[in-house]
Every structure is written in structure tokens, then in C-alpha cells.
Image (cartoon, rainbow, N blue to C red; front, side, top):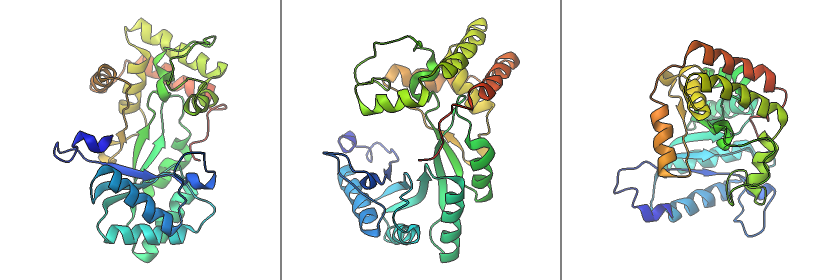
Length: 275
């Protein structure tokens, strides 16, 4: 599908990632681990699907704790030297695993990871105390994904809701929906969203706008460190709205105070940041 967009002719930058789903393979899904053979196969399969010979960033999108990380990183470095990608990124690793990866790369003069893709938003700030210091030590930028908690931080859902749009992030009939229900659907999180919704309403703001502006202007993200926000959307209109909200500047002090107060309320039920 992406290859059909003629992304290269349009000057777009493309990344790809390899998740070790082969550790717990699913029916009818192509499986990979992080063995050297599978790392190579996974990257080359992706390049073939994208109809290209090189991408910008190659992510190890989650830990494979069964196979040797040393062998994995050696193959990543070999693939980089062969010219298949420019930058190396990682995602969903524990902070100590990030440090381990960086030390192995430093000791062997391998390509270093320069980006960590991690979950970070107003209701999930677990990375602040543990992961952020590690990323700063090794000069790794954070690319925050799910800034709106998969749509939960838009205020569109209610705690007693039983009907969901087919195929949506919270559709309980599909695996993605089951994952998001398990991650966010509880009374504590709804209490937090309602507090944000109340103060947002007093200032004529939407919950989604508050969430995005808090993340860009009031969180631990730092543009000078190369940090960024990964913005997703289910429609062009949603994308345009989200991008516009990100440019509206800092939030009123009272709104920031309420958002900051929500995290201590919900942190006890917040899902872990790593896989």
C-alpha cells in the first residue's frame, strides 16, 4: 500500500521496524525473531514491499529476550554498512536494556541508536523517572507515540459505552481494540479524563487539544534534543486538526495544573512503557 503512494518521488522519508512477533507467532502473520537471519530477512522484506533499496530509519521495535542481543546488533551494524538504512532506532525496551544496547554498540563501534520510540502522554508518564535519564545520557531522542492514548484522550468515549465503531482502536472484536481496552478502559482513567475535560471546557478547549499542547509545551520533551511527537489520525480532517492544535502554544496555567494533577491519580493503573 505505501509503495503505491510513490513516496520517493514525493520527497517523503520512510522508516521501517521489525517486531519479534516470532516469539509468540500468530496465525496467518509472517513471523520474525531478532536472530541475525531474521533481522536481515525482515529488513529486506520491508524494503521489497516499499519498492526501495534504502530507508532512513530501521527500528528494532521491541525486545527479543530469547536470542542474543549481541548477535542482533552485529547484524544491524552489518546491514547499515551495506547501505540499507541511515539511522538506527529502538522501541519498547526497558531503560536498562537501552543502556545495554548502547554499551554494546560503543564497545564494538557499531551504529548507535539515536531514536527511541516510546509511549508518552498525559495519562502515561512512566518513562519520565527512569527512561528519560537513560536516553539523555546516550543522546537518544524520544519520539512519543500515542499522544492521544489511541483516541482515549479526546473525550469521545464514556465509561458505560458498549457500542464501538467497527475496526476502531477500541473495537473489542479485534485484537487492537482488546489491547486498548486492557490498557485504558478503567474507572481511574475515566476519572482523569473527566477532570481534564472539565477544565478544558472552561477555557473553550477540547480534551485532545489540551493533551497535544501539554505534551509539546509542558512535558519532558525537548525539541533541542531531537524529541518529536508521532501524530496519527483516522482521517485527513483529524490530522489537520491535530497539527493545528500542536501550533497553538502553551496552555493556561490552570489547565496545566489540572493535567499535572491527573498523573498522580492514574499512575497506579498506568501500563508499563516496555514490552
